[in-house]
Length: 142
Image 1 (tube, rainbow, N blue to C red):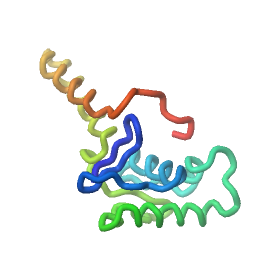
Image 2 (cartoon, rainbow, N blue to C red):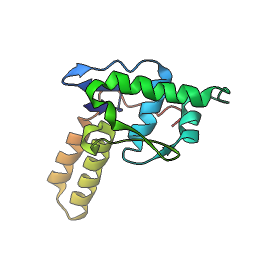
Image 3 (cartoon, rainbow, N blue to C red):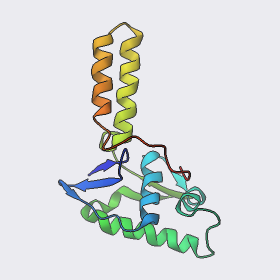
Image 4 (cartoon, rainbow, N blue to C red):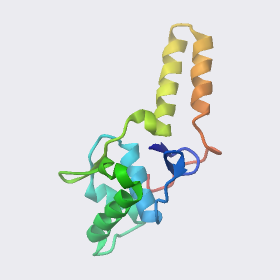
């Protein structure tokens, strides 16, 4: 699976777009992917899923949103894992465009620091290619 966070949120499995469902599932997925491999607490996920005060049924809705994400991932449903006080996704950073972009910028900085300006420019160009649309500020819930 490949996850695009830069530009318009999109998930692809075997070259096909995955329907992520509603806004809450999308916000849940973004928070998990931004913290790939790390546990994101249920409280932090609830904060991201609702603007303002979550309803009294929020924890149940969180579990439902996780279940919906897992269904949408089909055979890859195992990437969303319950872990202690929250959830995490088990994906390779190279499968998330935002992490690939960050890696390219770090590589460009390292190359520039040792005077390899051509290599730095190549890394920056590769990073620019990760964007799937116009750059815009992140939503306030990030």
